[in-house]
Image (cartoon, rainbow, N blue to C red; front, side):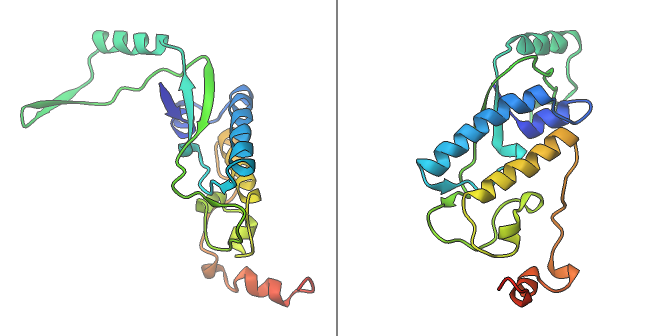
Length: 179
């Protein structure tokens, strides 16, 4: 059985991950990124809690779900002769086994120069925002900012449109002493 980190976050009453859950999941995500970057030469570009799936091996969750449904059936309605049931949530697992990085639909080659927009707005790395060359490090930034969200239960940054804030940072950088 699989659930995304996002689903687990919102099912947790305090909307935060524990340190233990983060440690076990992140080790596997960084191993996946190491393989993706070194062997496949790809940048994922869409790392977010929706795209990290957690294997749940605790089958007692299914038994608990079944018992709860038998004891107090979910509300339902009939549409065109077909019963439609309200969703019932699973209990939170006690043990997590394996985290898996998913959704490679936005992945790009990492060994080519890139400077286009990528990544979810709230996780966008500085080099992507500034439209400078970016590569594998953008994924690492993505993970770091996502970890903040999972551990703190809120965004570190918000993906507000830069154009509404005035001069684009690229113009500022061109005028700076660095260039």
